[in-house]
Length: 444
Image (cartoon, rainbow, N blue to C red):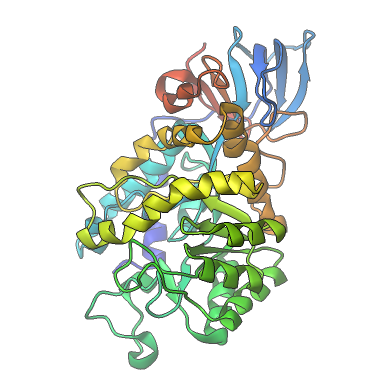
């Protein structure tokens, strides 16, 4: 089994390989004649010029912006400049590897180097400049991206998921016995995919261990799931005291707990314990949604992928009520004015990643194009900043305004009028910039 140290060394070995999309260093860049979607407005600006100095937006003006030597000019020709896309529920490792690869005793350096590192780069090239990793081995990958040795989005890491025994994060195979009784950590725990923690003391230790490694928020399993073998979707996981322990430990570090949960009972308990963000929630009723709105709790949910031939039959059966419920939750949550965020949550089917942008379009059943673009930029950025001082990237994201971080996409067309442009990043995203660095430019 590969240890965290082994995974670290493998990823860092990959970092020094030649990558296809090398970023320029931050410099002074002038976008001329662009129309801006600022992350919040229902319409584009008139023609403006946008000056990028270092890693921030310095000025936005309809007048000409003087520029001297050494300035890179990008002629926008009326194209749309908008904030980079944000996905607040990804699994950078689990989304890049299939279940067969994850469980194989032949899991190799080559698989990790190719799949995890390459997946991060391709995500950035789809226009996702920031993501929140919702659980799994992530810290070495994040370090490599932040140090510029690998191309990828900004990452808000949760670290290993925290789960009770027989919870959604208990990934043990039938022959693996309890660590508490037999003293041997499970394969998934050694892989830093999860902590199986029971009781207040173990939960506190698990939370603090993730914070020690740099977690920006904590992921706790509060209810049953569809991709795990031993916990029915309807079960409630973690006692109030255990969950409250996680919240207290996170709050002491100035951050918050997000929970995996579907049912009203599990989610009500989580909210009462002080949890700030619910992941999924597709089985929620109006009463509990109203309670979440009153408590100003975020609902970070998805339009989950349809069943695929690669899914286990048991998983397909468990997913049925969840898939049915998501069509009810989105419109109810919108009507009740919940704080809404969007993510994809692709797991163990790497081929789904190419559809990441396409899944944004699935929101059109209930939201206008302007509402959708606001959600996947400005609103998702607001959720990221719930990490407070544990946020790994100081500065304002999800907007195009003076002083904001320069995470930008230049789109060939008007995505407010035609949202399908967002689903074609290879052709329609002509410039991709993160932190003032240009990773793609087909204009010049």
